[in-house]
Image (cartoon, rainbow, N blue to C red):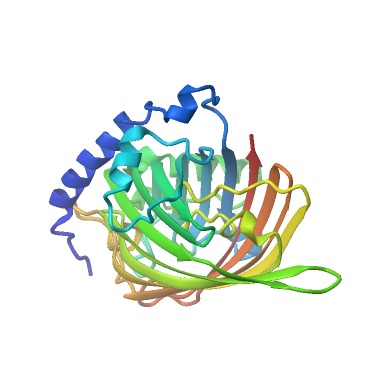
Length: 345
């Protein structure tokens, strides 16, 4: 049932060195910032994803929380500008931004009222992490993003305490099976993604725009390892203000930015993504110790639809996500909703 991630230690050590390098370099400011730009300016985003938003109750990916900040355009450290000019996966002569985020994800089996181990359902698990991301945008068409997340899985993530506290506040069924959660394990994920936007203006009394944005990328680490590809179709007004609604699960840190407009921005969207999964700790179990696990599916797909509304320095988004079965024996696909609120300062 359980597969050991045999290259985990070597991969984790290498990525940890890279992560420490990135975080130690954070205090460095760009030349523009040193000339008077306040360090706190940028885009702030609060995101929450929860299955209760679609009435499915607790189970599987049951909750995600994230707070993030993205710097203003070109406000990037000098060391990053030097490296980005030499990395083949990043567009050159581009607008650049950096981002920081802190988040927590929570995973449970379907029936949280059972105290004992549910062998044929996914493990209880939490993921608490901090993330640093960079992105470069070229010609308002290409967005290249890279991010590195460092965190912890297991009791140290605080997921058990958060879920028990929240269920006590709303006076609903208490989660009883957290004694079976994954063990503490440090986690690291290095991710990259490219989006290429095509857009077209329609004439008429109410100007509308249409764009199709294919994307592709990968994640590598002891938490997630996968290849991903998909596309998003949007119809509305002001599409150049961003590259789509922020998502905890599929967006990299730094991609939450948007460009404030004087007029209303609104659009509806629909997107698909497929992931070829090589590693998912929340299904495969701990990397280096024995733990509960299930046999994951190799190919997982997401369908998402939603709405975005923005005015000047504020943006609100809602997304509905339909996810195919992630492990063998899973009875039904997962469904959850995602809200985000962004403010530009």
